[in-house]
Amino acid sequence: MNTSKLTHKEKLEIAIKTVDYKVQEELSNDPSMLVRRNLALNPTLSTYIANKLLFDPTSNVVYCSTKNRNTTKFRDINNKDFDHRCVVCDLDIFYEKCSTCTFNRKDKLC
Image (cartoon, rainbow, N blue to C red; front, side):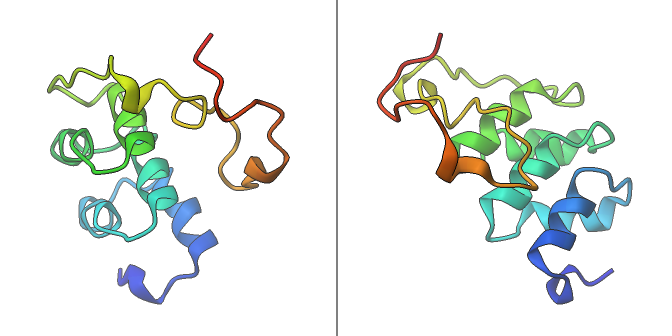
């Protein structure tokens, strides 16, 4: 599947559930952090891709990858880059409710 012709919403939907390794590989290189974050949440994500996303440049993606059961490598996320509510946010990414978030962006984690 050529994911470059898909809409952003289609990529988000596919990323969270695809079992196709080639699609996972393509989406792991997607410029959208939201697509890579959804991919990191995919319960059928390959171990290779899960470990790759563990070292993504975006904290949100890294955090989600640490929670994926297929991730076998370790990355210490106990630093200021991960101490932010947006990184550990559980809001459904399909609706992108960031603009209505009630948390102060300067708040620390609970």
